[in-house]
Length: 111
Image (tube, rainbow, N blue to C red):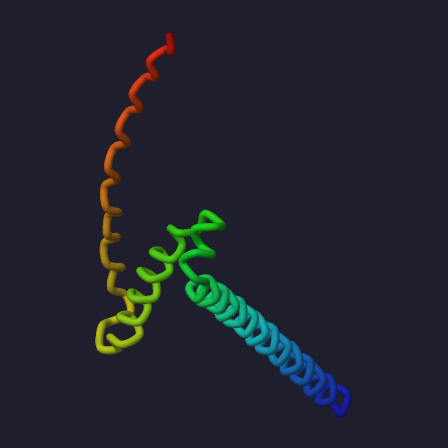
């Protein structure tokens, strides 16, 4: 009779250890995901802090607009706590239409 009770205690102990390991693994995954997101956010913030001249020099001038739009949307999303979490994202604003380039006049041959 004593062996049966010891074996059941042992199996319960093993189940608890496995449960603890699962919870630890899930927590670790969540922490890593959140860490990666904050790292990306810091990279975006760093890009935003670059001067316009640096961005133009590196052909990243469009990045600043994207980052500004994202950060405005993010601030609005963070400040609006009353909205239900399953609301669809607001429609994306279309970029301003670019003016067509004027065709270059053909050079007259020198005589």
